[in-house]
Image 1: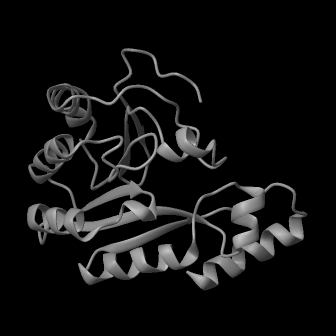
Image 2: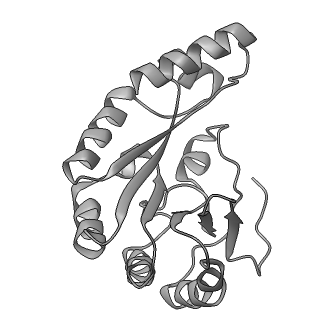
Length: 201
C-alpha cells in the first residue's frame, strides 16, 4: 500500500451532482495488515489521527469544501466504523462535525463486520431524523468462489446479509458496491457475475 504524505490528513473528491467524498487518513484496512488481502481498495496506509488532529482538519479542509454539497460520503483507508482505524473519540468528533452541517445525506463507508448495534444506535441518536443516513459496504460478488479466489476478499455473504438487515432496522439505507471486471474471468462471465450480484443484493 502506498504511504500517505505526512501533510495529507484527508483526501477529498467532489462530483458534479453534489456528492463529496472524504477519506480520512488511517493506519489502513486491518484486513490488509492481518491477511494481506484483499485487492479491492488501495487507499494507502498512514497513521490514525487523534481527536484534536481530526477536529482541526475537518474544520480547516472539509468545511470549506462542503459548499454546494448535499451528500457527504465519509470513510477511511478501510472502514470508518472500525476502531482499529477510527477511535470512538474520533468518531464522536465526526458525528459532532456532521451534525452541524446543512446536508441531506450522510454515507459511512465500512466493512460489513464493523456494523454493530452500538455504533448504529450512536449514529441514530446523533443524526436522525435530520439526515438521511446510509451505510456503504464493499460486496463485489454474490459468488463466494470469486470473493475467495479472485479478490481475496474476507467476506461471508451471510455476514453481509446480517449487516444489511441490522442497518435496515435503524431505517438507514444500504449501499453495496458491486465489481464489474473481476480478474481471471472472461468478459461474458464478468458481466454475468455482476448482474447476478445485483440480483442477489
